[in-house]
Length: 423
Image (tube, rainbow, N blue to C red; front, side, top):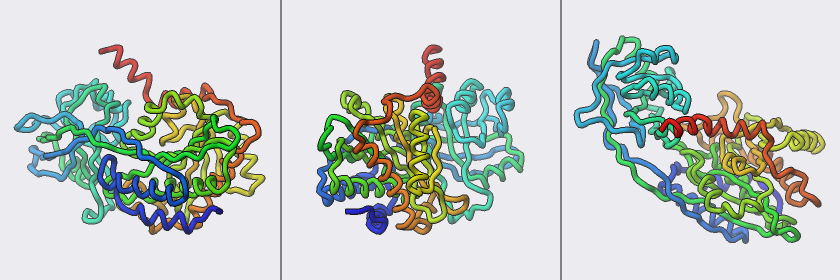
């Protein structure tokens, strides 16, 4: 049994459909992966967990002065609902934090993604509502989609107001026409949905108590087929599972395909919480997220000691593997493991600028190839073989202080602790 890009692409074609967190389609994808494991002779299980979601009933944005016009928007899930008649307020385009000094009580348009620092500043400014934007002025309206975003719990720790999302072209129009008063309507109901992780284990022949875990998320976002992000990582993991099933590993290898990564790493967080006692046996987490573009570049992000970075650099050169290696965190399912003190290595093949698309309807099979999938899969396998079958495991089971700080920064632990103290 050898790594096969052709076989990986055939499985990727089976996953070529939109599969958002907690949906029937996500479950369908999980069942496909489970069946594929079992066809390779490895028993797999679906582990369910609950996620927070919402159903948006109404979301509108209407400019009232100095002209009247309603613009298409999507409502933020879990954002605060407006009153029955909607929220009417002055409208402000906040270009920088300086503008927030005059934002109190206003509906505010921002052009940055809602992350903790910006959202915290908006809440401190006591804005009445938020409008975000997405897309490109060059977009064809009929050929692009307006995504539905979620106001995650991390953000809502700082407060909650109505929020909607608008196309860049429409934001450009209303700002250029001097919009100064608006009415926003949002009604959404929070619901609970079930998502799943797919888990398969191949016991070690000599050191079964030592675990190397492999991860990739298999969910996608709205409108996207999600084959680049991250059907590719999912099928690469399946190739590794087949290889280790045919070549029994000295240490136990666990393969996890995580659901609901796109809404906040929900699947991997659920796994580490449900398997807290088991984590002491995990020596290393190997994650694969995005892959397959014909025009692209393989990279390895090491959330572990500098010695491992050096090892990967040397090993790649010795083996003739074309990749870039860097000590860093990676915004994917390795984060919950690193936060639990487990070293992590992230493999990805990012597309060249203009040659790959992510988080939209253009994430399709068109720019991917079996050869590119196989290239990354062989890179992951080369490193995995060394670690799984090492005579003595060489990696310290710890996260160096500089990476601990990066993980804490990514999780906004300091800001969340401060707001908790204030409450």
